Image (cartoon, rainbow, N blue to C red; front, side, top):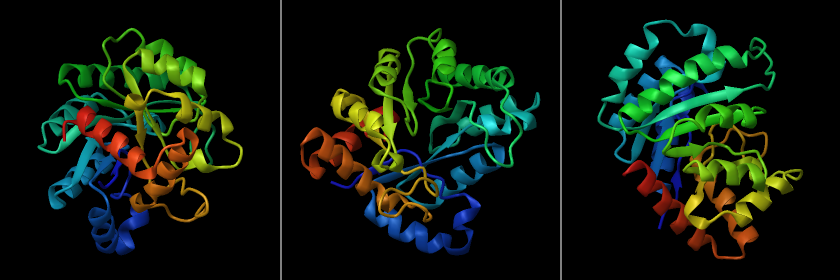
Length: 256
């Protein structure tokens, strides 16, 4: 069985120079790849990529980084994109308090104002949600706990076992990326070890977060086996078992 990458961005400009080669090697090595958008343009590109490659799928949404671009037309445009044939989720959407170089200072109040309508759109159309969260898990939880039942995942989870359990109680799955393999992330590894297997997913967040020993390089979905390998090590099971478990979880969540 081949793995499923539940979160990559092969439509991003970091792949522009060799996108055809990237598509070929990754589509052959993985069972499926889901490419979420971060704004309207990248969401449209994700759909175009999904239409081009048989085992690629798209998610559409506006990332909290792009909150200042949001206007009254965004929701209407997103609603139209949802109806594209291979759109399987809304995302990535969420909250982010981390201060990134080149981005304005985070404003959680403003981010929440664009999170809620996108969350409600996902519920309206019964789509899973890809939640982005960094340094704002408590704030995200306080918003989404009022929307039950929820269907989706917390992407690139960076929290501990306690936080993972809280989001699982809301009906969400937890997706681990390449940073699971980084030296200082024992708390994440414990979460990956102890979660019920039905709640575990894997991703690469390509082109970001290449796992050890590739850290610092451009990431690709084929590196997802290094994430699966780390989870297998923590849970003391085979790599093949983790690939099977996470792929089945992804198929069920996204209905693919």
